[in-house]
Image 1 (cartoon, one colour):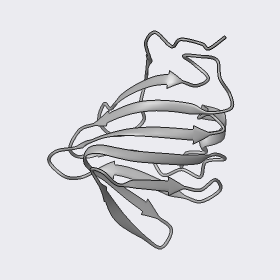
Image 2: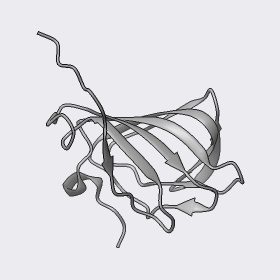
Image 3: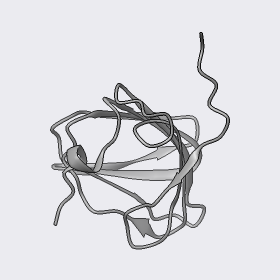
Image 4: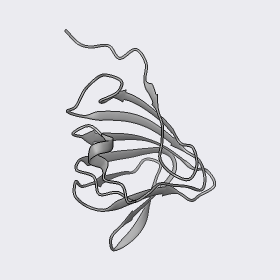
Length: 120
């Protein structure tokens, strides 16, 4: 039988400003470890610590612009675009533009604090 996810759980975010994270599927809301799916809304000027996660992250930007920094550079991901962050590679996300960003993030396996490996 399919499992209905009636609503997401709001997850606390990392970074210099509050970001809204609504987890629909994942370790917290659905007790799913295989994958996580979250709706993110980050304000202008938000930046999170760098990380070297042990999971792949697939991100689709719905509105605004998400900046993606990696070891040798950075690029912006705009509305209608996507990015894949590969497990074991250092990455940092931010939203430096005035419109912030709204996006969907899918992690395989599911996001966890133990496997995100954030910079100290």
